[in-house]
Image (cartoon, rainbow, N blue to C red):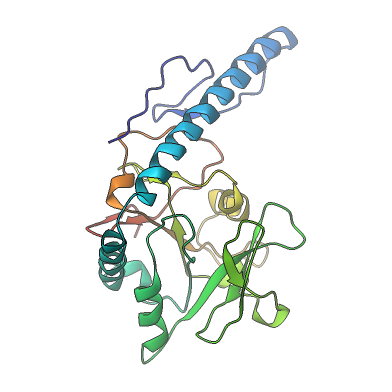
Length: 249
């Protein structure tokens, strides 16, 4: 199982290994702090990149039978996840790089007597680096984006505001038992969901409702400790083919 050592990190860290960029108290101290923070940030990004490469290769090396077993296992775990019990709108993803396939779960949602609405992320056409969510049904036309990932064809009528998503199922590259996540490195989910870090679950007219965030991963994507940063959006639960780790109610 891949591991990560935080040796050599020079910026200030929390007890969980989280790197924060600290505002300097003076000009002289600021130069030192900024340099140390920059060095720590560069080390963090290098560590993440190497870990991401290792974990992506591992999941791509799974056999077709293993991928199918993982898809069935995750669908079974999601069927008993309490966070989904009253969800009217669930967002997920389509596979592209060895992620756990949600096809069995999506079919379950579509076929349920009181079906929830299912949505998929698309690259935001205006806000660069952000995601937009569109409704996804069996007859939805799909197109490939610049990463060759299938997504619903853009239609204003099918846009689902993130505030209407009760649960978002997010593909993970890596995770640890503390609920920390490693994504593909583009930062799309972190930017789109950054409001969840400064938001309580209230229906404020000036703040969108916070969705529950559930990471989906193969069991082999677990690591002992993940290098994390202050901008990482925390998860409410992580689901693998064999278990569910829930961190909030």
